[in-house]
Length: 323
Image 1 (cartoon, helix red, strand yellow):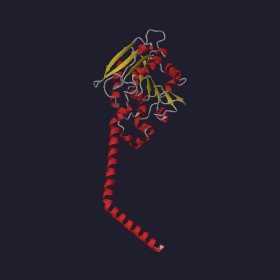
Image 2 (cartoon, rainbow, N blue to C red; image 1 turned 45 degrees about the vertical axis):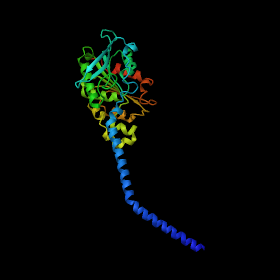
Image 3 (tube, rainbow, N blue to C red; image 1 turned 135 degrees about the vertical axis):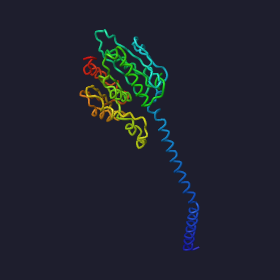
Image 4 (cartoon, one colour; image 1 turned 60 degrees about the horizontal axis):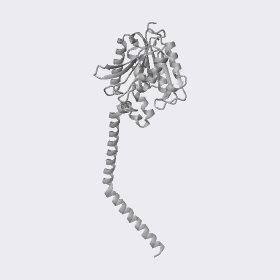
């Protein structure tokens, strides 16, 4: 067979194969279209289910109350040398029971500061995990200290939510305002991360009860944190129903309340720019700014001079009750 004949056969075979392929593609086209539609529906359905799952379970992500044995053993102040403490139950208006510790100074002692610190915890662990902080306020700064478990945390009843935690805060402020000793002392709010949002809520709603605020690594809002820690969910951050709009609330805090801002510059959870913005938005006539260049979100409390700066703020900028 000549080369020309061979080339002719190849061309004819190729043409035939192309015709067959085209015919098959034409016969398969409805199936391919149907398969493509089905894939789109499956992917769309999966995406919808994923978004619905995130929407439904977001409270478990934002409030991981069981993390670090959160519902297990809750240490008590006596384990940290604070033997004269009270373990109290606070009943909320919606029927939940909050567990709290109160550590009081002797009001007749010569070094009594006549100041009370309300410790507002981050979003993980239980109040037993923060008793070393309570001891610093109590033993080194001579303050009364109140610390409580948000609903759903530790041994408090209920389920955590923004609405619920605000009711909890209302309940604790009511308790403090009605207590014979605590109501006659200057109240300082100390809030870390989520606790900072609770502190801003309290100060913006009960300004007459608050005499000083310390905020550490807190945020403008939960929605604005999402793109930072979960970039893929940034476009759907509007679906977050736990908002905590501190950006709007902080401007409602009166200018006569001194504020202290503590910022970790390597915060991997809350953008450092958030607390910077809160500092700028604050109308306080006296506000301190302290940043820790090598600190991440959870280790700010162990940074050099952290506690010295807080002690100075409480001693020098928060006047004792009645002065």
